Length: 628
Image 1 (cartoon, rainbow, N blue to C red):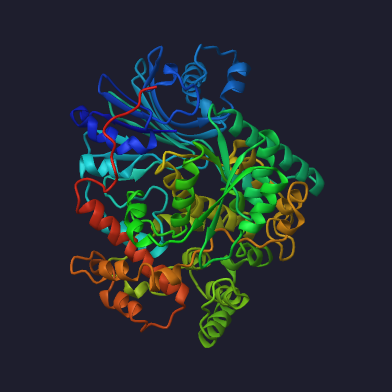
Image 2: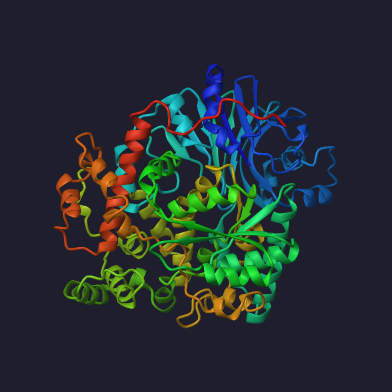
């Protein structure tokens, strides 16, 4: 895994040491820089495959140059399929040879996670591309005269100081994430998943292309029987796990919760690679899944490690955890993800995870009602009835209770806006408090995309799954795991986001995913083959974060310091009285939602103080590299 940076028509080589320093955590083993014509390419390397000198980047081949962040798991299969040969076993070399053979159409063949910049000197073309799911980040800066790109937002800000986009920050506060291309800067956009940008390096003409469209797969209807579908899922997932193990020259571990997603991944990995190292989080103030995870570890004789997180240092760590994202980020599960990745790095350099399973196979409880009713088109009478009931019922405070589930169901049913319905059913942060904004959030793009999905001739459940893959998964979950792992120079691999699964899962019959009240039914039935019986019927939990407790205890002092500061940013975006009333509990709202809003605002303030008001991010930079 690596860090990449580059420019077109912008000379920054005199600041190379800053760039390499900012990318160090993504690639501590080696660094490289090449300048060809008006293109500068920078690379820092975390050596996972082809550990010798032949894997160094920028890499050149017959007039092609590339800086690549990621792993192509099927690259040796593609070499064999197309008769490609090189002394190096580097997947980067495979990319160059494939591009030479078939051009950018090679993307269709790749099973992997990637973000790369490829410069074709003969055709004067620069390609910037990302993988199907958007596992690896890539941000683009354009000042009107030239373009820059980076794995890290912090470095783009440090080098170019783009102007802050307050409307974007307003949108972040409402949604809880930056939607797709959106960033907190006016001159910076995120390259979307499954897209590439082609730039003519002479004329600066651009072409933005969506090279993989998961929408079309949701419109397909699989004809497989249930048993056939389970067998096919089993086969495809084994291929994905095997590739992600075999394409590493270093030892691989696995994150293991008490759930079925990571459990199946761990089981398949352990069967393929004995003595697998596994890691489980045990957190104070939340449900302890470590006994369930231990059952899997014992069954497959893994080298198991329980990461006991006390959060005693959370007040000291929280700023550095959030600063790593380079933008406001308020998914509080990033905190335990950070700690477990830190511990895993002590033992391995690569770790498997279960990311993507819930969004592909309907693992969240909110999917159950959408299987049985189209809440996006519920009608005026239903909305009015739900609104009446939600207004007279007591506020729900316990997140995992059945009452809270029913209460939230009424809440998102009561909305007359598609965007409000979706936001209420998912992140549910500022829905209902739209009148508190001083700068209206610009939600036109997400509103347009949601409406477009809602107009598709597919079921309500498929709409919800598709919406989540385009929003929560891409803009929230995947950045969380990428930053949590790469902050410690640890590479995370996600078998559920393989080419084979992304092209297979969307077309499955809805009843294979939600069966009555049972979530991800097909995965649960597959898990019977691999996991102890006690795990199969466990509900979806993920990291059950004690956010209410943090806001009221461990983080109380630092949150109040930020939100009561005379230099706070949020009063220019939302009403200050609203936040002060939340702090003093003068607003009738659930404790869970109160905590989420306060953490949402707090995360923005941490970003603003430590990134925008500081010239250098508060990351520990290492000045030298170990050359390999």
